[in-house]
Length: 193
Length: 193
DNA sequence: ACTCTTTTGTGTGATATACAACAAACGTAT
DNA sequence: ATACGTTTGTTGTATATCACACAAAAGAGT
Image (cartoon, rainbow over all chains, first blue to last red; front, top):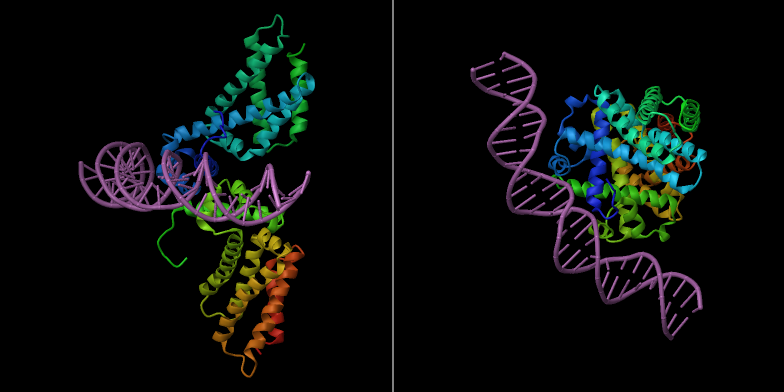
């Protein structure tokens, strides 16, 4: 959702507090054992207030994921627009900011992936990235004679798998390195040939 | 403080936010150049809300100082009550928690002391500690034949000076070490002779 | 089966805060 | 001295959140 700067400060603050509290509790407790009261207490927010913004804890989980994935995507499309006509560097920069975003929000991603609900989260992130890649490939239009669906599927799963590996291994390499590596892998395999 | 009724969560949150924001801005900007708007923006709070709790920025500064000094004092009288009848260890433990409190709130103390208004803050902390020491000495009643005022003054200034040195030199020793050292200095000079 | 406790949604009136506008005081440059 | 932008307190209205209460649902233990 667009984070309109016009929203009431109280709303922004409580949402942030709830999100942060939810993530904290999530990293400590199995999701099914998390109670709304846990979150409200941690967020220092009245329990009823949570129901003012989210229908239940499942909704909270989903909106939390959506929120982060949106931010993640926009964090790298943002830098894409800064440099207008670059091709190669543009992509690598976008990758860098993506890895950077994950690094900055490591708590979120790692607890999401550590959860038993891993599959749910992986599906979501894959779906998000797939559509994002789709746009990119459509715009480039340089993949003549190849099955588009196949390319997308291949790229997305490979990418998500790489992300997951990177996250679950506590980010053994810096974002810049990862961006370079992933890019050369993409290059070698299909995308710009 | 005095009223046992629980305070509204909103009040607690905004006061915390304002305090934190004020400290942040304070550590970046000279006090006279700080504007209420700076603080409200940083705290993500409406400007008018600050006037709901503080009359002006001077009041805010004072209440902020009072708040921290109160917490500092109670942080070490608290541990004093845990162990009822201990004498020596009791005092050292109290000292430790005091140094620990300062360490945990280093940003506050160091920016207070770094300010041009250093003298103001030093006076306040000295006054607080003086009355605290006064109580202690009164209760102990083992300083026969010595001028009480003199002892208090001596102890307080020495102590505050030590604190100031410790803070301004980025806490070169851990709280435990400081507590031991300060205690032996007290012992050697007057208090329990 | 039955208690007992916890959690969940939902609702009500009270209140803290947001927002926007305002006049006065202040600072600063011309 | 004058003009002009900035900061300050203050106000009035709207609303987000509070505390609290309640009944239904869900678990947990016997």
